Image (tube, rainbow, N blue to C red; front, top):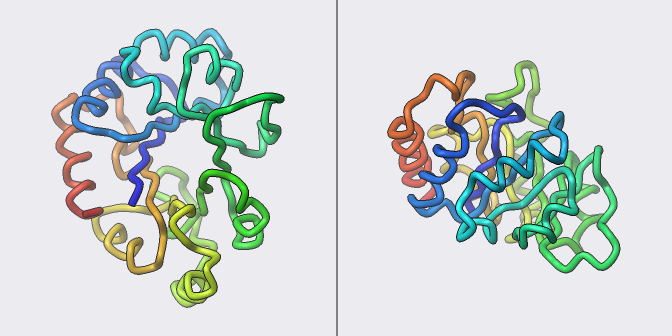
Length: 199
């Protein structure tokens, strides 16, 4: 199963050091999601991360940076929904319904959310009952290319494998509400806890 980390939507002091530490701990894929960023801010973040980790990074905005920095890929969403002409890397997408998952089977993988009530977005409840998810898995709609997102924590993570997902993406479970106040060791320990639940 894939374990994907999504950045907070805002930049914060010490973020690149934390991300570098997570990569050293074995973080396999990072989704760099900064919806209000401009291209130069994202470029500065990429410059601050060691070159050896660029092949594990997917961007949600300013897709030209993916080719420029030889990143892993791009992630389509409501802001950026078109694949650049000639793009060769991995392409993923955010989906909020099972129909969207079916409509995007040609992509490398998709996020399906929210599976459980969101940790990072207050009032953002689950779109799916356990029964609906189990039925979708039995029909092959949820498979190894579908990544669970939303409300994942130590209590809910163990259910993901049973529901047939190919992986999970974490945000609030790792960063909490005030990541700028956390120490690197705290983030590393939290990541390791999530890994244990996930295995």
